[in-house]
Amino acid sequence: MEKPTILTKLIGNTPLIKLDSFCSEHYNIYAKLEGENIGGSIKDRVALALIKDLEKKHLLDETKTIFEPSSGNTGIGLAMIGTKKGYKVKIMLPDNATAERVAIMKMFGAEIEFCKKEEWIGDSAIKKAKEMVKNDLSLVMPNQYENQTCVQVHFENTGKEIIEQLPNITHLVATVGTGGTITGIGKRMKKYNKDIQVVGVEVGPNSSIPGPRSLKGYVPPILDFNFIDQGFKIQNEEKVYKIHKKLCTKEGLFYGISSAASLHGALEIAKKIKQSNRKKAQIVCIFPDRGEKYLSKFLK
Image 1 (cartoon, rainbow, N blue to C red):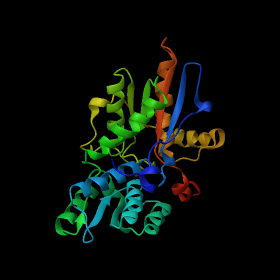
Image 2: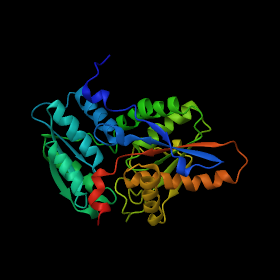
Image 3: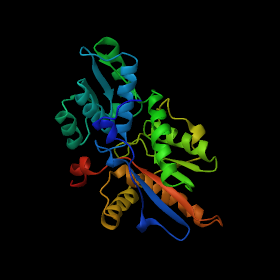
């Protein structure tokens, strides 16, 4: 068994809390607070798993640089863990990434390669990153969009934690990004109880919500719809921002806007539950990250 380190001790086992302001007589809503991971997001789990995977395959040494396209959180996780383990890290970021995300990665010693925000829609940035790796043998790309390690870490850890924390869960709601979170947790839910409803929340191609990807034009290979029962596409982002404000002022939770997007999807699903005669629903939302790295966005 691997000896626990400061990283493994502080990644995972995040709290699950009830959101009292959003509950009703028909349903309870809970938040899985992934921002409590040491690097501030659910992607700490993924970054650690991806680096371990590269080490297992003997693809890392002092001559190699971990290179990955990321909207921010995976990049931060890779930079944080990479610097602890002594690896060089280079992250491809869209040029509309918040200043906080850029600064955090640089503080961990990562090199930043910017791409145009238009390239981030679809898979243009991913293709560009793959081409760079092909032409530079010093670069090693973990590829969170295709690597099944990202699914497995959520199946083995995140999903297991949720079941232990709320054995009577009836619904699992998460935004769809690379697909690893919802596929891995959804797979675990279905193994535990096939009746648990797994709901994916999707954003549009011109979304202002950082993190989740639009599936228009690109569906990440690790996203498996076999473990998703329902999809909800956000049509009105203004509602998401209002929910985000309520999370701050009523629950005292300053989390990223994608957390509010997950909660928005849960509340819309809950409306349908209210109309039925089922027993009280127990809905878990994945809250991917804390809000500090988006302050410049909120203060505009």
